[in-house]
Amino acid sequence: MFCKSLSVVSSLVRHSVVISTARNMSNGRPLVYVTRSDMPQGGLDLLRKVCDVRIWAKPSQVPRNELLKGVVGASGIFCALTEKIDKELLDAAGPQLKVVGTISVGHDHIDLAECRKRNIRIGYTPDVLTDATAELTLALLLATSRRIPEAIHEARTGGWAASGAWAPVWLTGPGLANSTVGIVGFGRIGQAVARRVKAFGTAQILYTSRADNRRAKETGAIRADFDDILKKSDFIICCTALVPETKEMFNKAAFEKMKRTAVFVNTSRGGTVDQNALIGALQNNTIWGAGLDVTTPEPLPLDSPLFKLKNCVVLPHIGSATIETRNVMSELTARNILAALAGSEMPAEIK
Ligand code: DGY
Image 1 (tube, protein in one colour):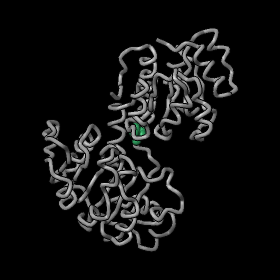
Image 2: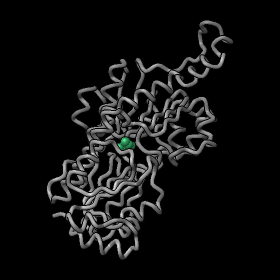
Image 3: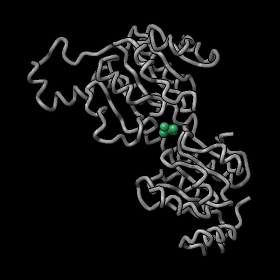
Image 4: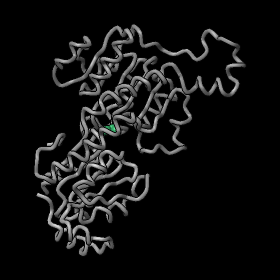
């Protein structure tokens, strides 16, 4: 059932936030707070058909204090991975809050236990971003191993001219063909990455998983333990969710077990890596290079040593950033919220 407009108003009064509530009082429509003005339109249009939508006015990350004010009285929150959904925020929203929909598959920014305690349902966006994220993972792997950013820089700034029209070992890097690729985390995205790397003629694909994965047969991927993957792989790709067990699993000891020629790629969460250990491993050539779509923190400060290292490619968390995918993610987030507000089954709920 949709929230009663009265509870919205009383919550707003309690928190002394000055916004117009007349529409909620007269039309009984639930209020949904959206954390960015640049959320893809499809989702916003779906919400607006049924709900009153309050949106953070700017196409930038909402400051925490504004977020805490903005959610007051909302029955639903449409957020991104940049917003921490914790006890403080749920308290600020008020007891009428029924659903949080995040436009992401990762949900480490949401306190699930706290939401469950309050019967707040949580929607997310699995599946729809698998292909986009796997594509970006391959792009980042190749950009790192084939030194694409460095090559572009050299071409534009005279390095090409200095080295001659063609140079035999200049800007060379390890090839994917005939290599061993280790995929840490063999969920939807890990499997999609395996299908793609196989097309490059890899010799072997290894993966970590609690049990044999029946989809692994499609690519001939072999289950291995984490240590084996570290020791045997030429490319190590992190696709695992960030949970307590995976926090900083790529630490100094892990980098030291890798081949000196290894390329490490992370498109999951920065928290899976001990970043100082990675910086050390790159500076000391303990490993050959790293491609990171995720870091700690995000955005990565400009003075981070990672930006100074030629053997590191950093992207600003764009794994799922295809136009089509972001639209579908926005619509799925809205449909999750609408279903929860209607008390129906959600298309993608975290249970
Ligand atoms: C996710 O969905 O968790 C990605 O990291 C962002 O698209």
